[in-house]
Length: 301
Image (cartoon, rainbow, N blue to C red; front, side, top):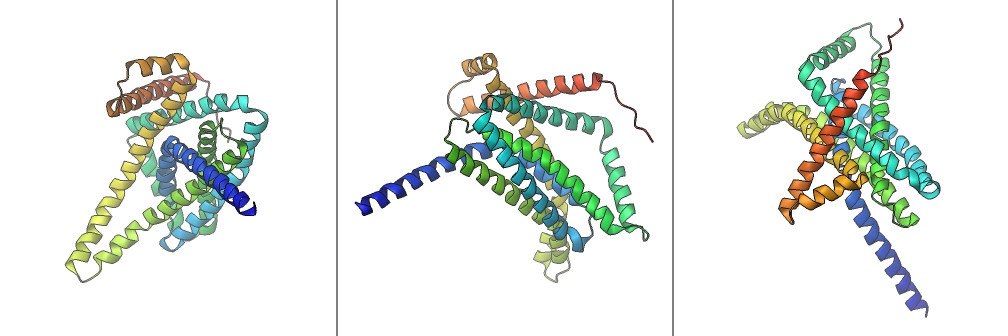
């Protein structure tokens, strides 16, 4: 009897873990756009820090990210338990924000051509090179800014994740949401640490005597900025597909229309993804247009 009870318990645990794995995989796909944007944005924010301080700064931001999720995960679970009707509106708001953010990035790129970003980066480097500057204060401000950005993106990840598991039992929601939250921070900041150290690896290999090492080092130095730009582009594209998909599933008429015209199989998946992205692009443009009509407050000096 005891043996059969133990086997039944183990079977239940295995079943729960399998369900959690499925929920986690689905959530990871849905949040890929936000994670890609989080990765590119944090890698760019941390760049420019003194070489010896890059990893400590990444670790400080990662700790802030874990604290953000320690606040957000219980809050999301409380909403799921006591006010589940709010999940879909929150998802729609998160989807609209993703589309708005992606469209705004496109507008900023087209209008400014990285001029503002270059000027900001140059000003930051000048501040760090100033002998009278408080490097610790500049570093702390950079960390605070990165943690604030992470809080917004983490909230999007948590809300989108929660929306994929509304029908699951509470225990599975707790396990899956916690797994996604932890994995997001570990993955994003592990990759950020690797990216910010790519230049160091390239320089080290270039200084070696072997021709192969020098070629690999030079290749890494050339590839690093291209990879950063690619991450930013892919992250922006994913924001439209993910945000658009959320909006489509929140409006039954649009969902049924897309399902009606999309063919079956792989081609259907591609068609659905493209249409989701177009919906996201249109929604982002509308929100950016509405925001631009709002009166701008003058900053007081």
